[in-house]
Length: 496
Image 1 (cartoon, rainbow, N blue to C red):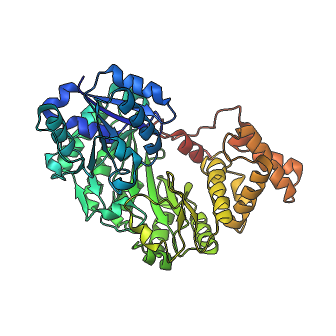
Image 2 (image 1 turned 120 degrees about the vertical axis):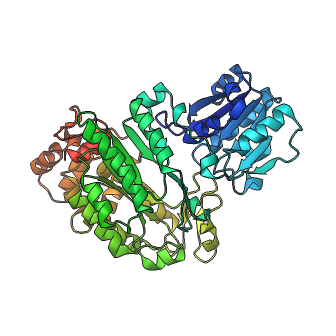
Image 3 (image 1 turned 30 degrees about the vertical axis):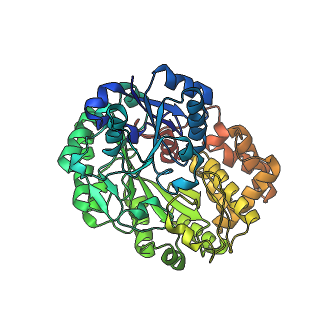
């Protein structure tokens, strides 16, 4: 074996789309190339041992914000025990500010940006000569029809046990300064006929959960309609063997034709991730985010009431210019729209993003270690930001899990943000933890909170007991119609 394509995924269920693109484009080197995926948390020595078992000449690592620290340890050990192995880095985390990163210093080569064409070219030079003189190589961005597609290289094991990621386009035309996609000039679509043939092949091989990584799925409505129709046709042909599709949706762009297609999907087959991030127009202007808030709210309400799509909507705390009161008002507005899940995120300083231009003016203080979360701003001090971090974790455990569906409205009351922040503070005082809280213990704590807030003990026990959280030893109730392709967490929201 000559060339290894490796990465450390956040979970086993995540299959690296990027590595499969590289493998698909290796050309004559493909027979000498192998993909090896690991999971963060693996012992460094074990990862190095497995890599060296293949006797590689070149190891290419995909480096991301979630794995850079562990990958750096792997690279350091690999260079100590096998200094002859050439190490090539790529990925968003090392494509920007490379001079500041120890992992880049340790490696032999770095490809910034797109690697589909540039990684095979660099491997040819290493193997055949002449040897590359430069350490850092700017990735060539080819036309999309020149890139070999990766979908045939999802294995049967991947299809049976892991999430299959797909993309109908790359790039993004929007300039939101907290996002790496703000560096793109536009969005580039793959040839749709070619793409749908690949999706048909995946479906024939047994894929039923398709997770699109496109940043702007509904930007080109004509293409969106064809993709949705592809899935509707599959559902019509085999209603007892349903598919599930996940897309990222631009919130203020939902024309009638798209609504009509979305309306046709049955429960448990469609999920939208919708980035609101902030409802504050002044904050949106600061971070170069163009968004019609009223139209976005109307579209979320329509999706919630007129379709069966599962809605996962994002807010970001810690943006420049936003204080806790402004964020709380946005949170309350979003709660009133009743999406199935609200992803409460904390601002992160992704390398290369323009958000750093606000550092001095708004007192932005970021953690120097991945994932580079915001620690304080001139509007939100460090202790308050810590409270928001805990809020995010407890919100995921209580609200997004779907396990407290009947109890949650009582917890939120008329002031959702203030009400849940108070619960979050209380939970932390009681547990001194935000992780590894057993479900039965969490249910009991929520009961105690309700009692302390004035609810009768029997009423509180009955309310929590009516939820899945109050029946932790039992499986969640199921109601038809429901797709077996739908993720378990979504299923809990559907049966509430």
